[in-house]
Image (cartoon, rainbow, N blue to C red; front, side, top):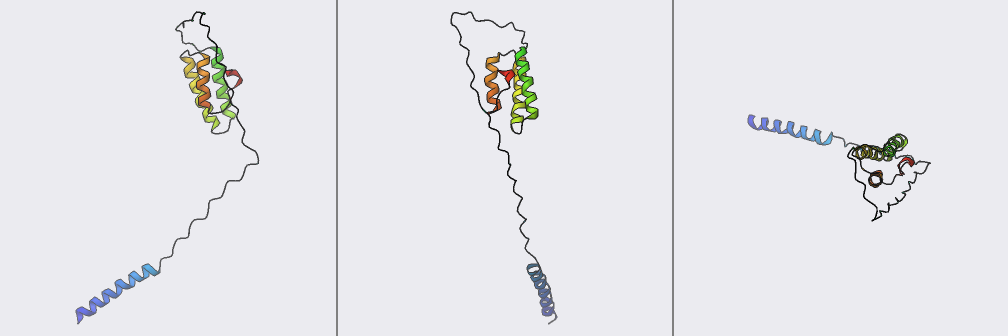
Length: 136
């Protein structure tokens, strides 16, 4: 009989512990909703894309060979500097696009690329943002 009362007591303790753990737990409340962003009174600026005029190549004109110095033209360095300056005051993500375009401009200008080929690459890098006047 001793053995039966020991098992009954042990079973009672285990059953009590289980019932307390099931009944005593409270469900977590869901977190409060996140605050919504306040609407901006000022509309987002619309950026215009201007087409680039392609240079007309005369078939009779001799093709000028590069000198191999790979120095950036003054107009390209001014364009790269203007891109970096405009990036400082532009809103995100336009500022990031302008900084990337300025770095690309500097790199291509250092390689001695001509302005016509660089402008197309810069417009693609700007993703719709306008080019500064120094790049035209």
